[in-house]
Image 1: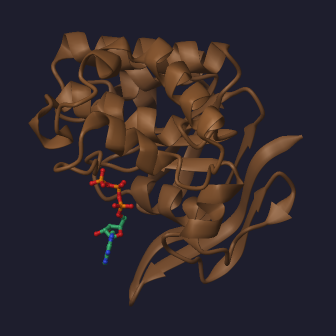
Image 2: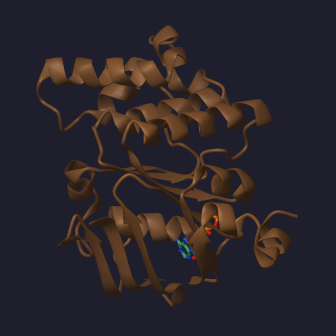
Length: 235
Ligand code: ATP
């Protein structure tokens, strides 16, 4: 069963036709990556899934339920966590408070503690910095915090928007290793990246998006060898 399926999705910002008939699917247990240039529609695809923007036509199916018109705060409580581009952590809140915000829908204190302990297994750095204000963390640490906050809600599908953006190569490696570890433990991930090489290396399958349309799809290992992909995105 596909955990997520988009069928012929069209999303507009006023008169701007940002997604022009996007169809894609993510199977349970996969890492799927969406690669493309600036402005191609990658972030809009994730926003359309998480309910931050509502598509004009087409369907978004999540666990076989049509969530196309579902607002973001509901979707966030039904197992989809969206880590936005630019992280958007709460800069004035501590690491611990940021993580607690991610668990806003979980009432049981014991469950929150369990979630947090699990986050610390992936991100020991966050455990070391519990009382530090989010805004004073490095870019890589803020990315870890944003991902940790998303994991606090115990999602079944994780949407990651450009997690490697603006990070030093050694930190990018760490982030991709964690993405891979999360997936090995069973997390399904839809990963948007401009860093196509690393994204295709870690992903089972990929889609190439160009000006709002999917122009190519295949196994990550095949796309990475494809001449057109190499020329346009890996040069
Ligand atoms: P980037 O990596 O630069 O974010 P992207 O592939 O994620 O690129 P989107 O941000 O999804 O691209 O943008 C797709 C198109 O929609 C672009 O033409 C962009 O200018 C437009 N767009 C995005 N957000 C808005 C908005 N809030 N209002 C109007 N147009 C928008």
